[in-house]
Length: 150
Image 1: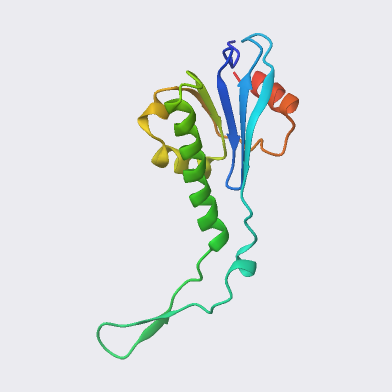
Image 2: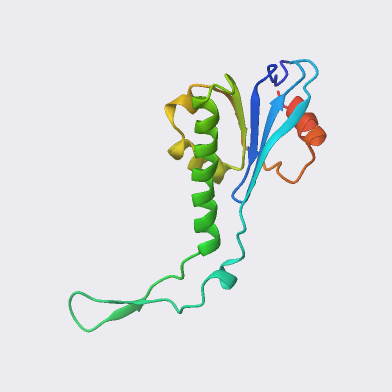
């Protein structure tokens, strides 16, 4: 069985739709030591606190019918937008030459949003992706969770 390995000086981004933790591995592949280098947070209250308008109505292009439109899920929309903020931060780091290897840890929706938003300078450096939510864990627990992956 092979272990999930994090190279020395590799960046690990652990994020979701509201928080992104950027780590650098100060250890080595056998004994990772993730040190926090940046934390991004987004205030994203529930949709019912963000929008108070009633859903709109759509008029039929023929006849006299109309139908209600779905409410906008502002909370989910902001999660999608935050992925772009994460992708921009990763690009700035890559463009500045701050890392050569990158591991992305995020839930599936955020991973998909990141893939759409990342520049090739970032994607060329990705050495691993993990579809998990680990943003609520301290760094030593994140190290343990990644070490258990095969």
